[in-house]
Amino acid sequence: MKHKFIVSGGGTGGHIFPAISIANALKAKFPDAEILFVGAIGRMEMEKVPAAGYKIEGLPVSGFDRKNMLKNIKVLINLLNSMIKARAIIRRFKPEMAIGVGGYASGPLLRAAAAHGIPTLIQEQNSYAGVTNKLLAKKAQKICVAYDNMDRFFPAEKIIKTGNPVRQDLFNVPPKSKEAYDFFGFSSDKKTLLIVGGSLGARTVNQSVMGHLQALAGSEIQIIWQTGRFYIEEARKAAEPYQSVSLLVTEFVSRMDYAYSIADLVISRAGASSISELCLLAKPVILVPSPNVAEDHQTQNALALVKKDAAIMIKDIEAREQLIPKALEIIDDTNTLQKLSKNILLLAEKNSAERIANEVIKIIESK
Image 1 (tube, one colour):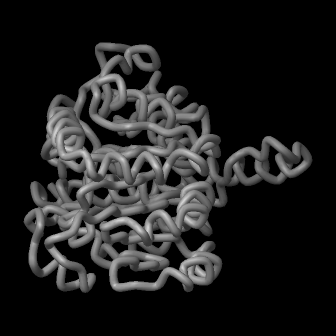
Image 2 (tube, rainbow, N blue to C red):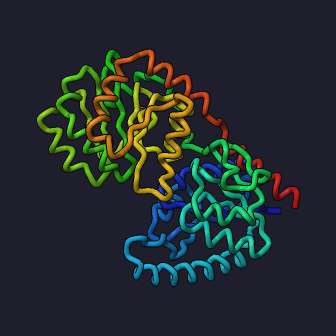
Image 3 (spheres, rainbow, N blue to C red):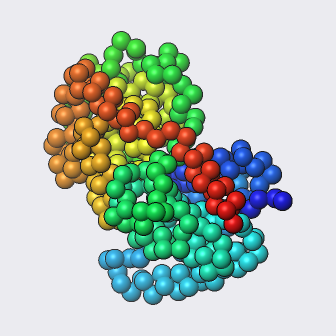
């Protein structure tokens, strides 16, 4: 019998990479399995999933607009249409199981699956559960999580701690690889600071760098500054007077494996996927949680590490003043770097995608 699975969710790289990793793990166990993705029309998954070799169907679903209530009339109509379409997909594809990774599309799809008696599994990436997953948990067979104390949100008997699946290609390059230094035109004799704000960029992080370019240029370190596409022009202009081989300003880092390989310290937002990667790679990090996310979950993600002395957190509102001075202080302090590296590695959850795939198998076998 050919196995059939639906994987649903997306919206950001943080949801899409785990979803693709889970699909790949299921494919490794069942090479002839049929896997269909269901995403939200117009979101990143509609492009990234086919690029990874999987079929995807889109629902016209979007989030509620908290600022303009009138716009929510259209949101509700789209939600209704998405629920009708999700039921049609379930009836036509007849999956054995539906897996939700969070994001707009997973709500209608997993509800439709449960209504048709199809078992569901949820993967919650954050330390503070999203509204959609809390609602879906009632009908789910299993809830795979990455943090402790998630029984605040979900029934304890359904929870299994698997960690978040991450991009496997990041682990192919050893630390301090000569290849990686050469790729960026950097020297292995100097320390390297990696600044990342996600694919679109992070305004506060970029402004913090722009406000301290003189201090960065005057330091003895090398800097990879990934601005994201919205901020690249402004960043290049600001960096012009300080141009040197030690300062790389780029919209996008095409080889994150190389960037992580040589980074002595990372500045990052506190998205769940980024944190999982940093744990597995044992990277000292300063986290600047984004304030523009549901339920302020990035602050909760960051605090889970800070409490275990595994990361430094600087609030978004304080970053413009404090972020770069703190980074320059820490990157020079070998003892702190070693302590952060050791402690963050203790939180790493290995083989997450495979562990989630094993839970899927247990559920379909128990049927």
